[in-house]
Length: 193
Image (cartoon, rainbow, N blue to C red; front, top):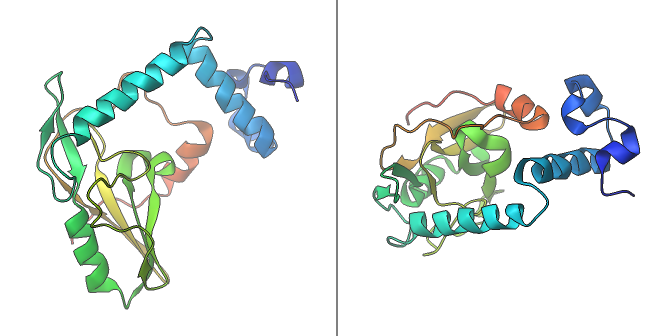
């Protein structure tokens, strides 16, 4: 299979309509995604450099304590960061353990890319007391809300589960992709527990 979506389809990934994208095979969807990333970051090592910068930013965000109930962290640019409150998540899961099927942690505004199962069938699948814990590789956000999703048999509840404050908006250029936009449309609003 070619490395380039356009070679296989005769069209650039960004030209597709939502319906056309949905009809693609999974392999072509991933190839389109990879090609869009390469187009955005370039082919000359810029993608690797951007990933390295992103990892460095994550290390700055998570480098102040163990991440369990951590307080607000301030990035070099001055933005505050909302961190996961793992102690609160564990407490809420324990409180509802007889009613829930599963539980997830993720960023409410970007759920499709950040949610990770932490509890299923009466057991924690991720140790929320682990000292260097991250969810989907991140421990907080300068703009999105760390959230606990409790999945009941016939409903679910999205609960903000974070420490710290942030009034930063989504990064410039942030936009949901065709597939994550569909997921995000079905995410319940946040409600306090």
